[in-house]
Length: 324
Image 1 (cartoon, one colour):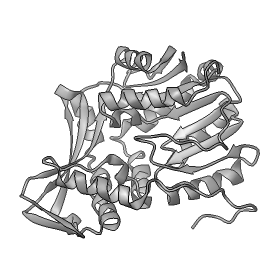
Image 2 (cartoon, rainbow, N blue to C red; image 1 turned 60 degrees about the vertical axis):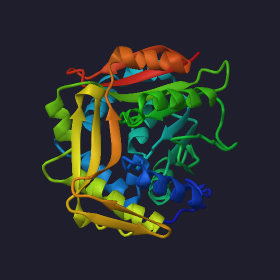
Image 3 (cartoon, rainbow, N blue to C red; image 1 turned 120 degrees about the vertical axis):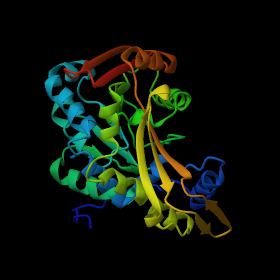
């Protein structure tokens, strides 16, 4: 339960109308290669499980990204500037953005996340810690469209997208996503993006990061089935499925799947599907980048003046680019 506040939080818009969610899930489950979007990994429990994943020794992205911000704080702050409108996409618990507050001193903070309940809880805590920052939370699925209300200032917008979440998109989708961000920036204004980018590295490192010894990532992936059950009225039994996470070198991406341990029939109102033993549901891709590849992608999306900061192993990069 979120702490009580002296003033009420602004209403959070819904991520998507229920019929849209049902249609999307049903289409994915009935596709020749079954698929469920990774955004459905993040219900309230899924968001907390992801927090736990970020603490695992195998999962290098979060701590490596944090080390870059710490080592290059003054340079990043000088490049980005202060007083921005900080729009945090996939904000989760808002912790990554909150660590930037002393550096960037944003005039407005706009966390955007698909999980309304989790976002509400995080924002309630932030409002108590940072009463001087205007905070406008938005519960929204921004993966296919971005609708910012009029309460979000257009002045010096900075889209913050850490954790290499850009890698969840296929290459063409990533380009379209960045183009939508570019369109949301005022022409002639000093707006831009600040991205966390996971780089190509040895397969063994990537395999371990997405299939940890404790099984937290497996629980995170399997929890998606419980979320789908609630949204679609389906009858998935998580005991009948197992987590798979591995690096696909040909596609330069980590893939996550759920694989049927036995023949199963999954039913929901108006539909059903039989999964044979070993058949999979594709739940996530996490594409890895090269520095030249991300610069090219940003340029094609309408950004320039790209600057990057790296960790000593060059496993990860933080990238800032301005709207052209």
